[in-house]
Amino acid sequence: MKNPVPLLALWDVACRRGGRILFEGLTLRLYDGEALEVRGPNGAGKSSLLRMVAGLLAPASGLIERKAAVALADEALALDMRLTLGRALGFWAGLDGADPAPAMAAMGIDHLAAVPVAMLSTGQRKRAAIARVIASGVPLWLLDEPANGLDAEGMDRLATAVAAHRAGGGAVLAASHLPLPLGGAPFIELGR
Amino acid sequence: MKALIIRELRLAFGSGRAWLPPVFFLLVATLFPFAVGPDGPLLARTGGGALWMAALLAALLPVERLIEPDRASGVLDQLALRGHGEEGVALAKLAGHWLSFGPPLMLAALPAAALMKLPPDVLWRLELGLLIGTPALAALTLAVGALTLGLSGTSALAGLLMLPLAVPVLIFGAGLMAGDAGGAWKLLAAVALLYVAAAPFVAGAAIRAARD
Image (cartoon, rainbow over all chains, first blue to last red; front, side, top):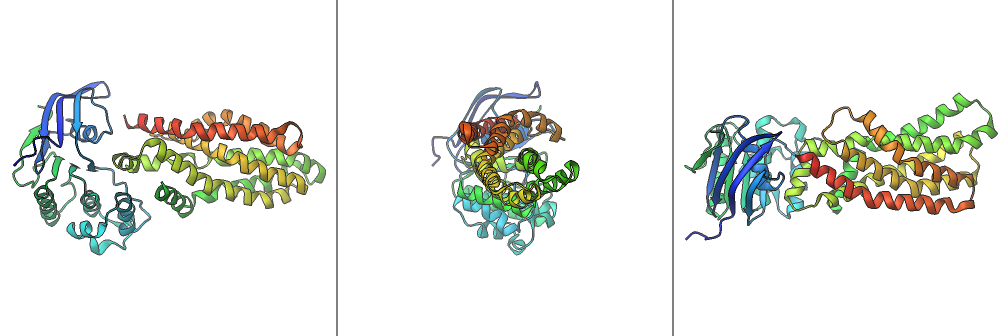
């Protein structure tokens, strides 16, 4: 049975960046265990939408109600380049009071724990950002272009992680200009 | 908070950022006698003021590397998501920055004072002044670093913003070395208190504004 209170609700939200309206009148609801894909061309406001949901950006109008903590994986890696991957992820896991090891294993980067972040490839960095989201243990995941740089195996691991998260009652809001392997999740189109 | 301060110290000493100010400070102390000439009494009279100038300019050096890398790499965003207020993050940065800036500068003041032929009592008052004054300088570095977030090539702008605000620190810091009269240390402490109290709020607001 569905929890009647949505984890995330947007009411008539508009996004203005640099004086231009990117989208307006966006209303959506995300319940426990649901996933929603935000599609749209470059510059449609997908990343801005995710940042607004995260509370990093104020909507130009409308209301955003969020009942749960969020974790965000976007283009900014937010890992200290000089540290090894294990210690860099460990810093955030320490703040979250979590253990990063299972999340690193889930994304297949546990063998890279001793490698400095600066040495990692694009796809490995993306996996690290997703691993931080997994490790955070919060109900609502915001994934911005999670497929960028991931190989087929990484995509499979992403799909598995998302499925496990949803099975545990979590929700996922993902933005991508390409279709994502979210297990047939519904999608909305921005910029149409 | 503790984790943030420790991270700040690791970044400062690990990247070498912490060594720039004391090395710059010593460099000025080395160059000044060459410029003024090997006149002991003249050096002792003017050296203290020159060292305060050097401390001021040394405080400018970390401006660009204090907050901007954390904004660009998304660390500030990730901290905000975890419920850490911008003011708290700024306060942790201030504490971490002072620990990597104040004590090394006070240490560098020892050989610098010898190069300037400062008498022991003046050296003692210089150290006292740096102990009180470096938190104020660190606070200015933090605030200016936050105000120039997202801009490129900010070193000239940072100097223009910061140096006028540092005038009271310079006046009372140099005044403290001239003698005990006038309670200069109290005024220096008052300025430091004001800057340290205000900087986290200025920096916090600037960090939020830089997101937009």
